[in-house]
Image 1 (spheres, helix red, strand yellow):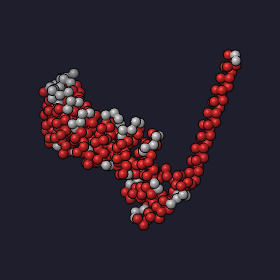
Image 2: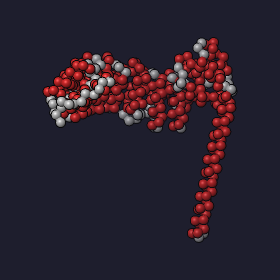
Image 3: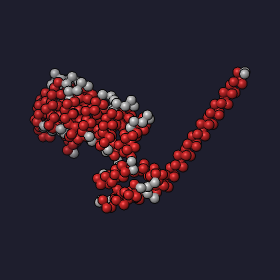
Image 4: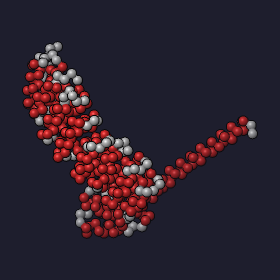
Length: 366
C-alpha cells in the first residue's frame, strides 16, 4: 500500500469515526429528551399528591397521599423520585417528616446503604448524598467508613452527609478530615451542624498533632459561641506553635466575648507575639466591644507595624464615646505622626457609622 493510499484510508476512518460519534451524540440527546418528556408526563398526575403530602399538618391529612405514593408502580415512581428528593432541601417540620417517611417506605435509604460499597465513585457519592438528605441515623457508621474513600468527592459528600445526619459521635472522624482530605470549610460546616454534642471532641482536638485539626476545632468553637471553652482557647492563643491556629483563636475569642477573653487579646497584641496574631488580636478587641480595651488600642495606634495600628484604629471606631475621647487626645498629643493619622481614620469611620458629617483633619499639620 502506497503512502497516498494509507493517508486516504486514515482520513476515511477518521471521517467515519467522527460521523459515528456525531450519531451517538445526536441519539443520546434525543433519548435524553424522550426520557424527560416521558418522566414529565408520568409525574404530572402524581405531583398533586406530593404537594398534598407535604402540605398536610396531621397524620390523617397525609396518610392517604402517603399510601398512594408508596404503592405507585415502579415505572411511575422512578419518574417522581427525583422531584421528591429535591423537595427535601426545600421543606421542614411535618412536611419533611412525611416526605422522609415516603422515601424510606420506597426503599431509598436501603438502596443507598447498599450503594455505599459500589465500585462506581459516582454511585457511592450519590448514595452518601441521599442518606444525608434523609438524615438517616443508621447510615452514620457506614458514612464514617467512607471518610477514607479513595475518591475526594466521595469523602467530601460523606463529610457533608454526616453533618446533615447530626450524629455527635462522628465529630472526631470529621475533624481528622481537615488536614487536606476534605475542604476545610466543608469540615467546619459539618461540625457546626453536629451542635453542642460535638464540643467535647472539639476541645480534645485543640491538642491534636495536626494543626489543621486544631484550626478547625478553634474556628468551630468560636462560630458556635462555645463560651465554656474560652479558657481552653486562651491557652491556644498563648502557646500554639501554629500562627494560623493562634490567629483563629484570637478571632474566636473576639466572638465569644467573655471577660477572660479581654486580657488574653490585649496581651496578644504585644510585640512578643507574631505579627499576624497581633493584627488579629487588635481586630478581635473591636469584635469584643469592651470599652476596657480602649487604652491598649490607643497605644497600638503608634505601633510601627502598619496593619497593627490600622486594625487598632478600626476597632476603636467601633467602641463609641470612650474611644472617641481617646482618639481626640491622640490627635492633640501626637499631631503630625502616623498615630494621629490612624486616629483621624477611626474618627471618620465613627462619623460614617453614625451618619454624621465627616470631621476633617484641619488641625493636623500638612
